Image (tube, rainbow, N blue to C red; front, top):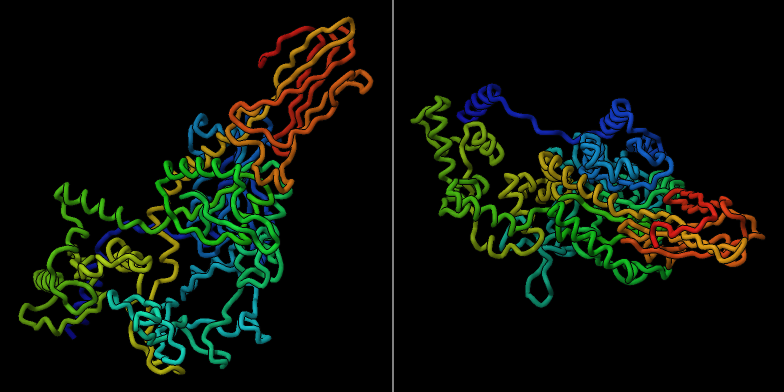
Length: 632
């Protein structure tokens, strides 16, 4: 009764507290509306639909460019792609916000990107999977919704997950089963699970299943859920035939096929940046070996230094480093680099803050002598029996409730038994700092990645990333425990981090734009050899930082050549080729010289054309008059 009164009184009190609402993740329809709004309100933005998802949702692309000396259609471009992984809502948000960010910059800052080049942005390739975040019951969905027969029983999607305990989250079940057991409780941190090693003398005591029942009665649990195909396993480079989630064949999905077709039909794309699960930027790229077809999975040796320098610049601008690097087999970024043949990069945009970063924050807090929640973790505190909240916090909460007149001071404290979640809510409403009981041994031994995530959840996210294990009477398995990681917790940061991430990534995109190849043809050097005979020399120069093609593009014949053409009658050429191909040209002022000997009259005009499918066409006209040119 006392608890009921306390709850009702506190809930009434909280209505009077004005709070700043957190930014919310946007639904696919809201993302689509934002794309339309940007195009309607900015003449620099145009939109197209490049294809449709499996459920018929349009996949949109924005082109962003300022008018300038170079016609927009003749410029090379950067392509920014997000939302291939359905659970990576962060990438979609940042991709959309980058458009707003670069448009708001002064023209001098955005010139390398929007006036010299142009930007394509495809913010959400996999809208069907992204929509799952907004379902009443949350279960992280990375793959698209193409029905699949994961257990090969002839029926598709017949045994998915269920929210058995009604908390709105799909977590995990610890199922006591000595015959199938694979895990046991971590003795240092009971919330976590470990896999025993045979020589350690420890025996597994339970098996882990995702939350749900055995719908098809085959003895397996949730082995054939909704969908689907992992679009980042559905591209050609490193494609794993019969791989889990890879799809029946390469580009089998409408979403991946639409993306590949867009890229192949826009040969002006000179660099690609992907926001998603893969990382090629926070540290030197680590893939190695060859795929089943013999194609190399690693960077070409001549490209390693390029990626190293870009990685260093990325870390300098974003401070994001040492991110996990999942296997990139069949991913869009692997295909973009290895088969489309342009410098291609991928980043997850965010990762768990490192333990050393947290310690540095703690040190700064101590140095400034300002109390912080983290600084209270190391005090000697008394367990209360309510999660990891200390008895000292419970006492302070009781006294505050008495002082506010919510409860009578004479009532027994043990009669007030709020849950962990309720206690955290009451403390927040009353302005009481929560002091949590921490085991120093747990802190010392928190070396596993799971332990570090748990520590991050506890110390920096108020424990919101993990659901405590609680007994549940399963209709088929008897007594089990349900709990574990909250869906999306390890993928999505707090939304208040989006603005800072966007600001850093916008700087990186502009940096990449400033490094793109800038190829030009020099003013000719013309020398009269005799009456009617002339020598003409020109240099093709790359003033950009990037080479005109990656080393991998040259190896697999995907480099798009520059064509140097002398537009004169064939019979007037004494020596030299009328048409020349440049398959690759390094950057930073690298030049390649061409020389012709021609028959012609003084002051006769000749045209020299430098053509590139990716970087546009440039034509200069000169006359047969002696000149030293401007790049001799």
